[in-house]
Image (cartoon, rainbow, N blue to C red; front, side, top):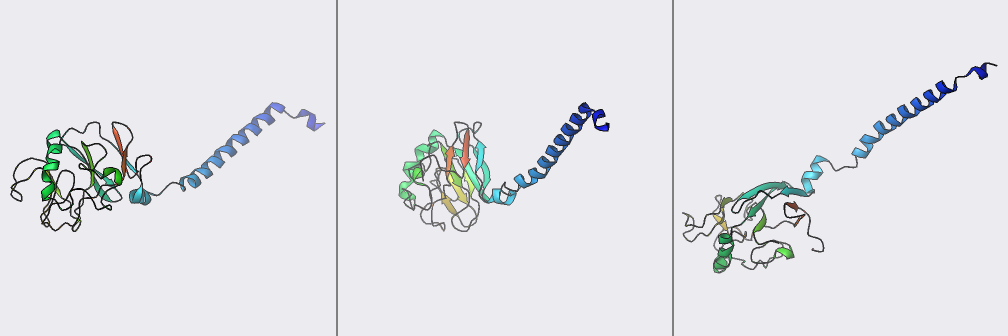
Length: 199
């Protein structure tokens, strides 16, 4: 007889409440587990791609991002800076970027980049790893009377042109490295990933 007095509305409410609380508990338990699948901050620094907005980068300007614990320079070269590149070939150790370890195949050209005006270079000297200074001015400098813009390493006087190609007669043995990168669109560049179809 007592079973006939059961309030079915109350039973439905208790069942629904238990289901909601149980689902919430299951979700709370699952979130840390799912979060453990994400790469750690250390792993992300070690190799995760980096996306940078370059829409506000004006000609002659450089921005520095960190990728794999290294500074990566992204610079927008001026037409004047681009025009100087072929004039420097006779002064360079590897003007045609023949060392395949220094850049991907898609950057093996005079400007060492996908788009001529945008350069992407690892900002460490190939001699002992110092960070060269950005000297974009097309004018004589105390370290080079024929300077046409580029990068100067004050640690041991190594010099690189605006494409990161190393000059003859300096301690740095090779050109600055070009990391893998691709353009996501006209405003964004992704460091650490090759363009689709490239190796």
